[in-house]
Image 1 (cartoon, one colour):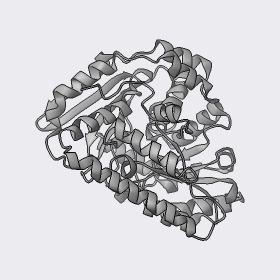
Image 2 (tube, one colour):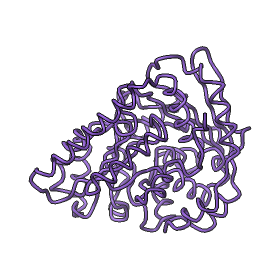
Image 3 (cartoon, one colour):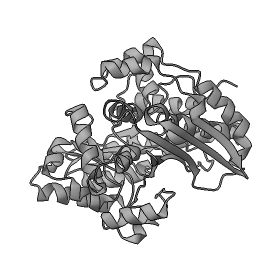
Image 4 (cartoon, helix red, strand yellow):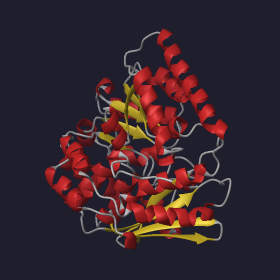
Length: 399
């Protein structure tokens, strides 16, 4: 069968935006990324090992085409020297290893961060597609089409609702856990054609280019986690990361991720300076209604008009959940909804809950203290306890 990844643009925009920042500001950083499956697969992922290694071999032979580079260079926030770097870039097979550990599939990328950070999305996409190829039956795509039509009917029916101050806008964030590349393209194309008044973009850079959509994304957890190991005082790592972002993009890409050490700890660092400079905040763990109320209260405390800001929700959403959040907040602030697995992998089969997270940087552990139990990932309990103490995060936040 054709390789899963056929273009290096087939990744999320935020990989490029974080990559550029690291290349410009911390190019010497060493990093380690670890693959984890959080749920029970239908069959052992170790069965995929030979296929995964074949796909990684292929991935490391790919390079950016002149068309890819021209598209990236057309984005206002992508700088010419980064495009030049990508022109000569190629993944190094020596920096990533896949092996079986019993029934578990182990994948670790280790090396200079600017050479290994890009592996994440491709690895997740190829593992997903290889996994579902073995489970697909003729009825699978028909069920996916039926569920897609139900989503469209829900959106089209919502037009009868009373208008609110700010519009309902959602984006495709489904690349990491998609059923397949072909299915994601089918879903995104359909939403663009049928409900363009609501569907405003995709995180997938390849689809954004091919379908003439807005590429969506700013930063992910790995960006702020990296700063836990860059020599700044641990208590100040969020401020250092946000400041570097401001200096790199100078007004572009202004949505900050809030949950690397939890919303409360984030807001203690998100002072008037950052609140004015950033366009908004992204939610990715914890109760979204509680999070949104905290964000709006913070803007009110700083005397910032929340109507000039945007709250982006992206944690395990489906359309009904997104629409409930919209009804709750849409008269008070601008909103956006990044919907992932429920768009790109809703075909009646249980999706894999897989991640590939930054676990070490410059030989030191890094961690995320999530507001959602089960989302914390750190292989060093001593560092996790220290991080929790520094930011006064209760123990249950790290469960």
